[in-house]
Image 1 (cartoon, helix red, strand yellow):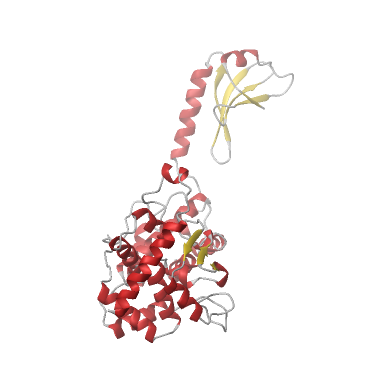
Image 2 (cartoon, one colour):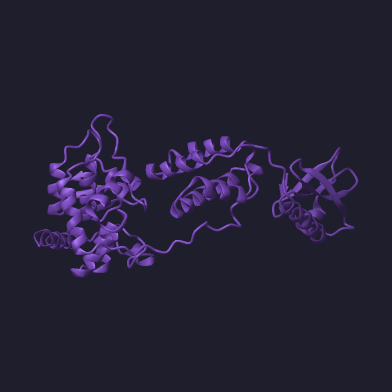
Length: 368
């Protein structure tokens, strides 16, 4: 029976007619007073087996002192490591991946599978140390960026394991990512962008079409690679929240360059740049990017650098920053926080005007 224990309430509690009756405090969990036929005693439950410990009798022991003793015992118990059942690491990983399937984006899920299944650990998850993880990551991944991604993937996984009771603490909590990465600043200049677009027009494969649309729209690689025909509504791109990084629907006006490109695509049944045979989105960016860099002779850049290039050009042609952020679907820029809550303007007309000016810039670039 639960009761808000006060001095007056304890005083008025009746003795049990037979046996014992325990009244548990609503304010302090696992603390209460047990009334027998002749006495009243303060008790507390400790440990996983909820072992009862008697603190003292009323009225020799006051309620305040009894509650203080109970809190001290309960806090001491919380500091002691609890016995966690042993679980095989790979079994827990499979449970985690299964849990992620319904709530994680396909591109993120691909990375989870790559690292969590590719870097395997034998034995109980509780026996794995942070150093074990770091050593395996260093041995089984090559680039600094992939080592950082692997580290973050395992850290998120261990946090999940703690929440689910498989672990008492995250073994990677005391550690930092293996490499400190400097922010990328690569922006393609006009000559480089012209050479890239020429290469894509000459190589009209799926990869070339995707790269062109990245240049024309400034969207993320995964959003364009997984673009479905149902995401295109006449002259607009409507990306549902499940496909965007910030989980919000993004409505983007399409310019002439983008519309002309899409009209020329002979896409699959579902995906604009998918394969007709198995109706899956494009895959194979690594090999295609290496070939592109080799054939164009351009200095190394990533496809995400095209997004930064897109923003830089808009700054050059005078597009207001907040409009560029709307085009990029940024939520942490000039219109964020309280401003974002109250400012619900869609900026569709401003975005349309900016897209038209950007198309003119690209046209001048191609004709130079």
